[in-house]
Every structure is written in structure tokens, then in C-alpha cells.
Length: 176
Image (cartoon, rainbow, N blue to C red; front, side):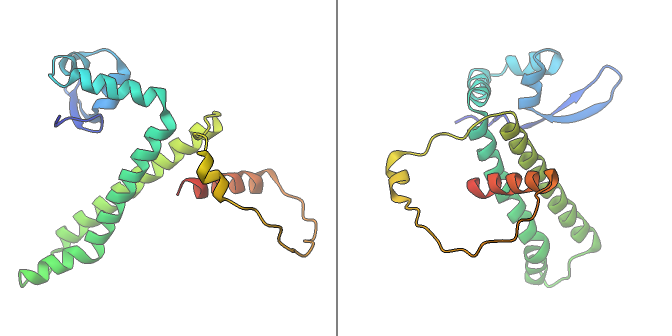
């Protein structure tokens, strides 16, 4: 089993000495440079390249998996910041330090920002016209639409902004 994935973080140092952290996915996307040449030399290169090409072939499945993982990381960070940090300190007969609480809060903010960024990427894919895979026939047959008696709502004009918010909400509700 490979220890590297496309999400593995690498440090890229420029000629001026500026250091930047990025993922292997981003380095492969660049397609050139010292970091790219270094990754090509790794034993895991064929599997990394195959995973990257699979992502390009089905971007919605890829982004959904990345969102699932980011949700999990966000939930873990939230639990740690709200409960785990204090339980751990209590077990050691101490109180958490301000630095511990700041670090936990920073990790939570980072995880939430990552999740928000991925959700925006998914929304952008929908806007570009990518469609989710077709629903399998047995699942579709189980869905029964029944008429529902609804009172006539007052006719309220829908603005562009309201329409866009509705579509965004609807697309998320389908995939959650």
C-alpha cells in the first residue's frame, strides 16, 4: 500500500528561498518544475499519476469523496476543540492551556475553510455543466411521487438572487 496520495502535502522551495506547502495533486497539475521532477522519481509515481488521471475523468465523484473526507476532518476538529481537548486535560489532571485551545481553534477553522473551498469547487463543477451519474433503475423504481394537496401560494416574483440560492441549496441537498 502506498504511503503517498494526491492529498499528501509537500514543501516547494523557490529559487528565492520562499517556501510553500502544497499537495501532490497541485504539483502534478503544474506539470513542470523541480518538485514535479522529484515526484516523477518516486516509486509511487505510476499510482499517483493513475489516481490523478482518474480524477480528471470523473471530477464529480472525486470532489464528492474529497468533501466526505473534509466533513470527517471538520467533525473531528470540532469534537477536539469542544470536548476532546478538555477530556484529555482532565484525564491528565490539568486544565488545557490557552495555547492548546488556540491550536484546536486554528485546526477547526482550517478544516472548516477546507470544506467550504471544496463545496465551492463542487458548485462550480455543477455550474460548468457536469452532471451527477444516472440513478440506478431499482433505486428509481422505489421512488413514488404522490400528489399532495397544497393551497395556492400567493404569486411572488422570484429574483435572480433567490433563484441562485435555491439552486445551490437544492444541489447540496441531493448529495448530502
